[in-house]
Image (cartoon, rainbow, N blue to C red; front, side, top):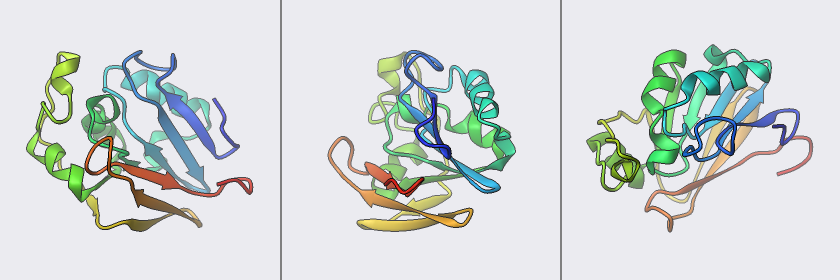
Length: 160
């Protein structure tokens, strides 16, 4: 599902497992990023959808985590294993992912568990910037849904 010619919804909402939160693909030039990972139960479908956007999974540089809940993070291990991407999360949620906290991540609600997961880049403070291709993605800390909730803001086709 195209949001713009550079941003696509590739998971959730009938595209992958019904329990997956929305997963987005950002594709700038030769590099790409995923926003969230879903539960991890439909990773092959997710990769088919990514390829359907004319992006090979090995182009994925970052996996941008919006918050620590399982429907957004359960697929981190499989995605990182297949792409070699760097996992990015705010430090206030990174600790729950790194310790494998199945309660705070809500993995238990999904009849699963969350294994300890290394976070490659921990966002700190209120605002951070990442480079992807020739563009910037702003990570804005928005605590509430979880302590480390993050909104990612970028520009595509003149839209933010």
